[in-house]
Image (cartoon, rainbow, N blue to C red):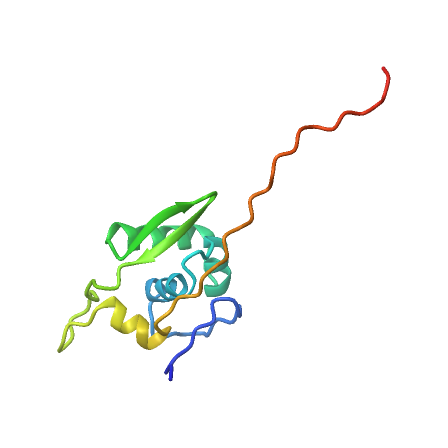
Length: 126
């Protein structure tokens, strides 16, 4: 049973949140590793520029690894890293994400590649 479910596509944003924007961005990425920055921004009610900056900070800190997948990015959350909080017992990102999102991230189907066709000849005379 999940205690908290965040749907990264419902477009509803509360007036306040228990999680920081960085934490909410990380949840969106964990939920859908192929999520677009535009979708993160729309879902969380932030600008694309802010989403880009936050994903960049998460990547710089080592919590997210960016990979190119065709024309898009795919993100890999580093589940074994500790949360940067002072708590009684150190928790990992993976432990918290498992609680909030579940074990399996949503997988996006790979896009079908278009076959390039040679240009058609026309019978028009000039």
